[in-house]
Length: 370
Image 1 (tube, rainbow, N blue to C red):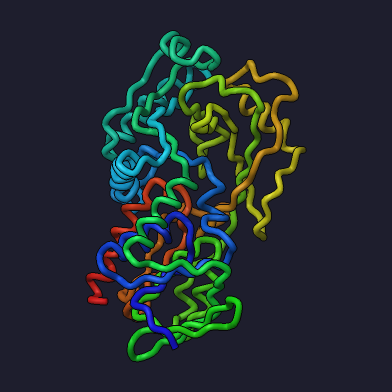
Image 2: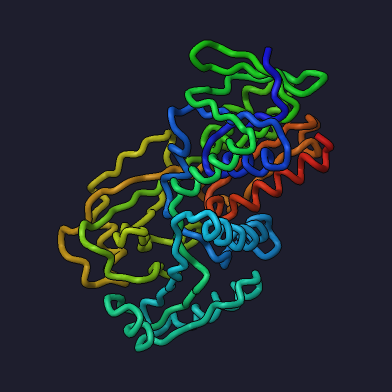
């Protein structure tokens, strides 16, 4: 039976960032990915936005990791030539009676350490974004976009250069605790057994399946699983905007916003609906809902221009009508199993925070001496 120091389950952007972080620090790392390619779910089915860190509760792990991760990600992309753009984000007030809310958002961001936010008038907004209709806007200069597939390839390349190995079509089945760590069964071309000292559950949508397969783990520690689907529509013409355009935030959502791509195109989304399975089709009947939301800030949207584009599923540990919960890390202090790191509820700003998350997980293992 083969032995490896650290097994990372999940080759999304967070799993790959963790594998890279550990490999370049001397860990012997194996990445298990159930799909035939990396990043097939949450990591590639999102807005690809680099978030500033405005809305997360002050002092929360999401707020801390987002701010740290944003700086790390911009530096990483610049030095590794990963496609990205610090295009900025404009949050628009649709009417004069809501302009005051923009200053409240600036204050909220400043309290979180985002100190470059400011409000502009409708005239200033027209000069920046002639296609946008609003009574004023908040400018977030440090928001941007990143080529998520390119980022994942860069992370994988550095991990492999440091000795990490990637196994595709390799589904984690179960694990047992042993005196030296874990014995793992993997469904690949043949059912394989291996052992490891450290087991990192970074499987995102599959994190619950991994957790339920670990013998000896108290099942009461596994949080509830809720799936939130977000759909996107796009237009075939070039983007009418130079920055990201966001409506005023909603409870539990940032609303249907414009999503620039590095090639000059644009899509719009996501909406949010609770679902009970992972399924990525986009219902064209949602078009009128999207048209109405987009025309609140882009009245020039041509009739019939929107086409179904893509969808993503967020793995949430909170559900409809419940208080929003942040990232959940579980180490030995939680479950009593040294070397096991469980991660649940990793949605936005997971992409922005991926390098900081990797550093955090590395610190959890270091503190355990594994």
